[in-house]
Amino acid sequence: MKTSTEKARETARKELKSEPLESVIDRIIFEKLNQNSSVLEHEKYFEIPDKMVMFYKYSYGKQSRFFSELMNRAELYGSRCTKCGIVHFPPRSRCSECYGETEWKKVSTEGIVLSSTTSWYATSEFFDKVPYAVGYVKPIDADTGILQRIDLKGRERIEPGTKVIARFKEKRKGVVSDFWYEIME
Ligand SMILES: [Zn+2]
Image (cartoon, protein in one colour):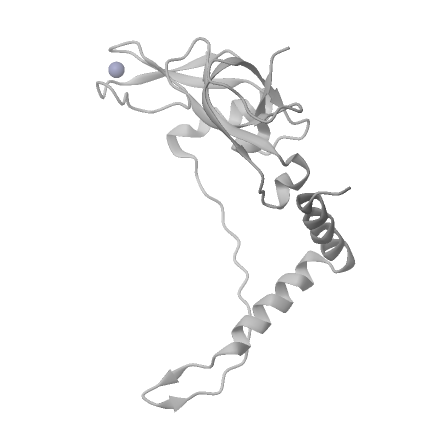
């Protein structure tokens, strides 16, 4: 027996396979744009649906090294306050406790779950991962935690205090979903 989540996942996959994603997007845009024409001072204006393509890049700014080490070396970097010594993960350019300057610090891939919840819904990237847990994980040598996906490995929930280890995607893009956590057996 298939669950309703499995059925919904299958339908979404079939729809995406039967029609290229680009034309699905185009169809949705045109349907939406055609719904209502603008009325200005009680007069309806003739409009033609069109689309605008935008190329851009955004900067990670002072968080850059976290993403470059993650992508290039599959390593996790936090920041250590040079004044009070607190280790933030994810990194901060200034300490949230004393506003002191921070320096980069490589942190362990092993971590402890601070809190977590189980999710039964997902966007397309995580369809095949449902159900999965999302929680705050603190590396064993850091003082704060990161909100990240945790593989349930067949369990229904993960208790605070559970030991986890970071796993990395083969092909990394320099985004936070390049890694996730898994329960340490
Ligand atoms: Zn500090």
